[in-house]
Image (cartoon, rainbow, N blue to C red; front, side, top):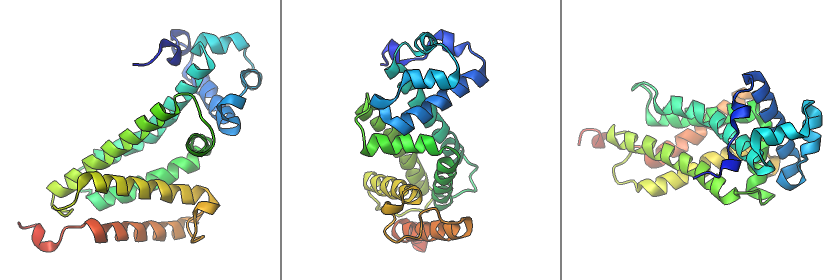
Length: 225
């Protein structure tokens, strides 16, 4: 259950959508650039051109502001995944894995500061509620992948002998690391994925999906069992 201080107030929710978006996006940049403890409310309100007291009317605390920022970033990342998950029947499991990875790349391109904040939370700083927030994020990822895997098994696309929790862990780790390598050079030991051009990136994604297919795909005779 959330603490009341972690939830944007009614005052914030009544603001025009454009102003709400500007406040949140500016706060994303502040936390991404400086971390939680070094992030400055004074610097934030100066950039926004609003009174310092307004921030506390909207979020009641710095922790509440960060919670709102995190929720905003997660919601942006989840939207395309929900669309992939509920795509019409014609889209198979391996197509959805490809689409998931492509959606992740689009997200980090469109929202680089949001992804920078995610990386900072993982590797650099003990943000408030860090364990709870990251656990919630990875629980969503695990649930999403488990649903895809079970659908794939039911449709005969994935081997029936697959251990589902292990497959979830495997895919979650691979997808996360691929996107990290695209963003951060020293996590790409092969020096081929980091900031790859569209055509090259497409080839790497296809090879990635091919390798996953080789381990998970059901044999032809399993489809008729």
